[in-house]
Length: 289
Image (spheres, helix red, strand yellow):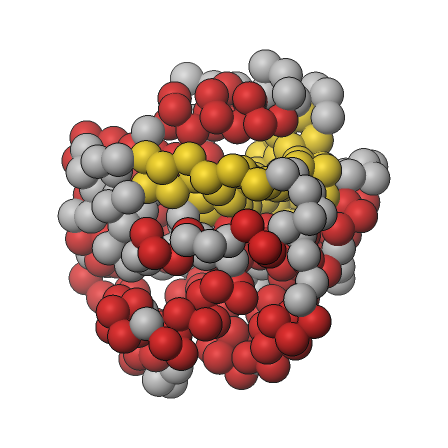
């Protein structure tokens, strides 16, 4: 059966992005998280494409997008510039930007560093960088939950862990974490495994975490400056996230100069856009229209 969307490649910020595109209208950019690729948005793409031009790229280092070799190539300011330049390369001045997990981190950064390209912002289960930075310094429970971020600083071992037994961690992380196990079919899991096993992909994925630890000063600078997000923002938060505590969403209002709203999703794991696809799609459509 043919896919309803189109695949193509776009040059932006010095690298070649693979993306999926569907629909017409104002631009919506969907940014996936770790350890996924554009396919994480398979449910939202056709739903949003009824009103918008939807683009879901493989982020830098993922899927069929270029994989620069250096850890510094994955700094958060570089990733935010990727989004800005991708929007421009797609012929648009602004876009609604949506991000889940690491894609959410990049979405936050894009809104902070390049507010001129973000029309409306939506983030799914990813804390604001300032909130998360403070939590890692003061919230012992979150520090323990984030153990893997520290483990990812070890050379080579994390890549081995991601690839071992044919990327078997996909079963544990996706279907294992999910409240609705049936949200991930065997085909879905096979596609995510294949993406991790692409040459160099595991290293690129882990380099996001390595670069984040080596550029803490960027987040501290944002915290010190008190820079606020100007785009109207929706935060969708699944309440049964094993990696990120709900307390990371508390007291966020001072971080915004425009409207901000949180929508909590009970009985749902970290993979909210896949476990509750219809609810997420409806929420995004309402936020963007």
